[in-house]
Length: 155
Image (tube, rainbow, N blue to C red):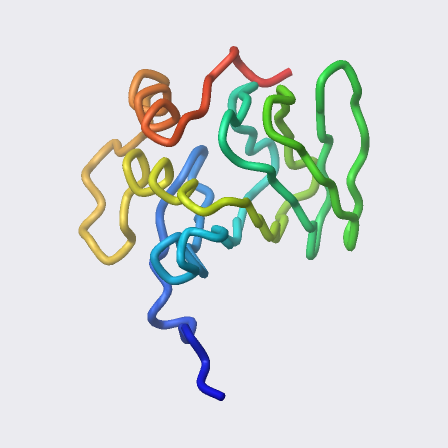
């Protein structure tokens, strides 16, 4: 039996993301036949995506290290190291990192969510433009490309 896709760490695309966090594309839709996207966040204290909703993907977060607050619908929960959360599509959600550093594994199905990160994020293999940031307008555009909706700023 052969492995349909294998990617070593040095082959995985790393993107600068919101607040200076790094999102590593571990598996994308192309590598999985459209089945899923797997990524990993290296994030710092206070990193928080805007309140948003996925129309196409169900999402799973596994907190490998650190801590975070997670909001889903009207609920707020603390996620501690080793904690996992399932966020079905069409449920508004967000999170905020509450530890100095966090390592967060993201799995979404079906695949394609990586398009959003690639559209707005900066590939770390390229030189960093002075004053690089991801404006909310670019984030909204990137979200729309992958069928997501920004609903407002994080709590």
